[in-house]
Image (cartoon, rainbow, N blue to C red; front, side, top):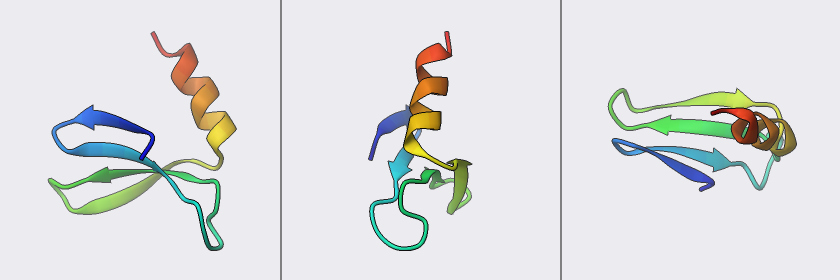
Length: 51
């Protein structure tokens, strides 16, 4: 887990398998996962630049 967004939503970094390095968002309300970035560096840079 990289960060909590509130309401049970989290950013998660994939550590193993063919999607290693991707960042995904989990949302328990609709019970799904969404890829938000192809890589940690891209996600982190965008996260730092967001006001």
